[in-house]
Every structure is written in C-alpha cells, then in structure tokens.
Length: 190
Image (tube, rainbow, N blue to C red; front, side):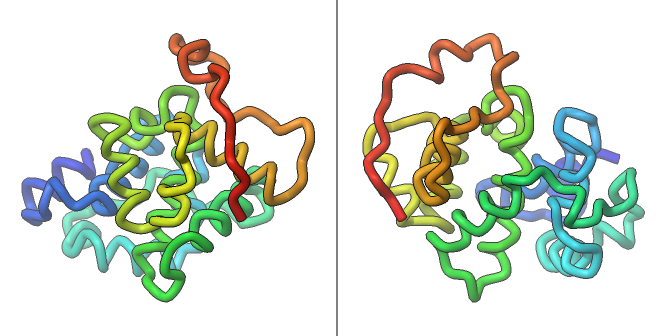
C-alpha cells in the first residue's frame, strides 16, 4: 500500500507539511527497497514508531498500513546513524517529538544511494532545506556555502567527532556524484 497516497488522499493531510511529507517519503522509499530495511521503522523502536504513525498519520494503522519487515534492533543500525540523529536533534527543539521523528527520517535518507531529497521521496532539495529550516534551524543556517545536505551532514558529523578522514555518505553510485562533491568548504559548527 502506498503510504503517501494513503496519507494525502484518505486522511487529507496537507501536502505542504514538510515533516509529514518527509516521513511518508522515507517510509515509502524504504518499503520499496530504495533505502535499507531499518528505514522501514525510521530506526525507531517499535513503540515510538507506532506513536509517530498514529500522531502524524491518523488512521493509517486502521487502514492496514504497516512496515513490511520486523523492527531492527538499535545495535544493528549503521554505526553513524545514532550520531546523525543526535547531531540533528541538537540543532532543533528536542522537546518536540516531531523534531526527533524528522531527525530519524533525515538520517534514514542519508543511507540511500541517490540525492537525499530523492531517497526521502521529496520533490527536490528545497523540500529538505525547508524541513531543516523548520525543525533544525541552527544546522540549516550553518550551511553557508550551500553544500549538498547529505555531504554537509557528514562533514559536520566528522567535525563534531573529530574523524579524519571523513567517511563519505552512501552516494558514490549516483549519476551526479561529481556535481555534488565539489570544492565546498565547511565552516566549523558544533
């Protein structure tokens, strides 16, 4: 079942709401196999996943929507996933559950092989920028060189963790790799 259509058609959620669009897009991409299996649950534990689904997409469970796989244990998540989530949350309002859920959606999207916006099922880079501006304003403002978001996240994470060399995000197979991995520089951000 297509979660985006279920949400937008059956439950009349605003297609302009960046968090709902991001969450729906990541779940749809994960269930279609364009993101790793853990992204079907956004890297959340099962109770928090169902809380997110019921809050963001009321009626989706009653309509029969559920991830196609079992939840993944936190220990089985990629090693940098928790660091990406924490970095994002630290630049937003950690008291808002939507901030945590949006952070998990963004971090999950980083493990796709294409542009972040594409792997998140969004219309373009502007949708990722809007999500970051609305939920993670200090991180959004720190990207003063207009670096591509996935690359920017990894560079900020490497600065925070003092990792050298910095691992590249999962996008080496993208047909636009050279265009995204140019000569931008990152100004320090903590």
